[in-house]
Image 1: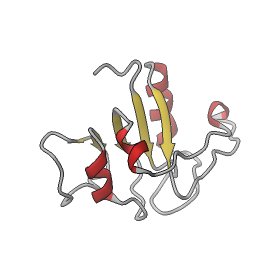
Image 2: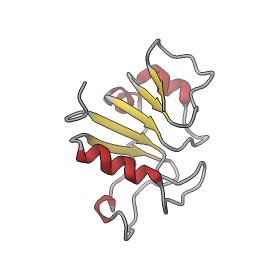
Image 3: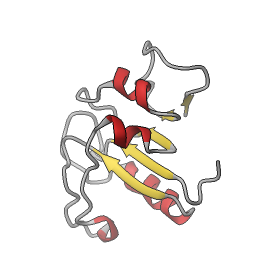
Image 4: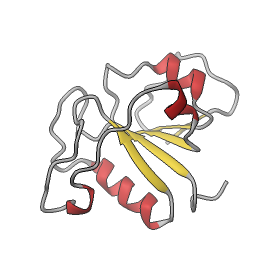
Length: 120
């Protein structure tokens, strides 16, 4: 499926695992790029429930973390693991997501369907 019109969920807005500090997070760059390509972009981060104002990323200020539910996971065309938080239920992610782009090798050892996980 083309990126334009796709629903893309980025997991982890914080710049490193298990913290709430989003300064200099590369996830913002990914969000900007997907949005520029026409994707409907959202994020989930248990440590960053709402994007606060930043000089570099004012366009994302006020955006809220998408709730982690089976319905929300299944509704995405692609889910990108950008920051791997321990709070992520990876077996549940594999059970409900169609396509997972794993940039952190977080899904290693998690049962998944053939072709479901792309390592990046």
